[in-house]
Length: 98
Image 1 (cartoon, rainbow, N blue to C red):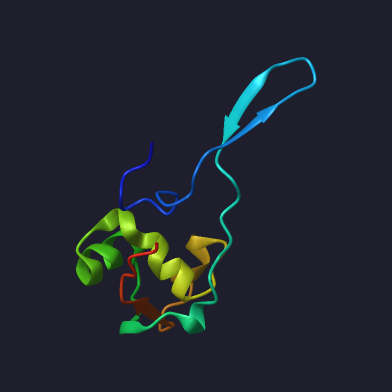
Image 2: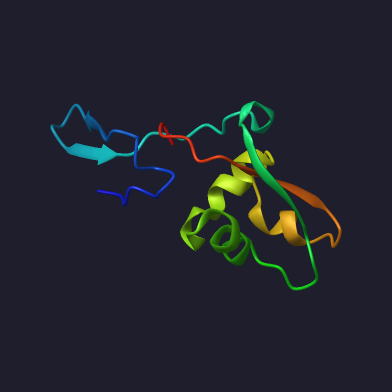
């Protein structure tokens, strides 16, 4: 259903059946891992005009894996990570269970 690099790739769909017999499938909520528990590959300093997708491409080799940087920095709102120039961001080592 999702690409292997997706943050939802490891989540299994859940099926819910109403009393009327209507069947609905959905992906369960994904809980953020504690960022401090993720091993660090490197740290990067936010520069003016930085974007998470470009940072992920430079450090992880894939712009769609920006969410890993979000996880490592306990970010629920990705744009907040690049709002402050000079902020140091953790870039985690990709984990297979992601």
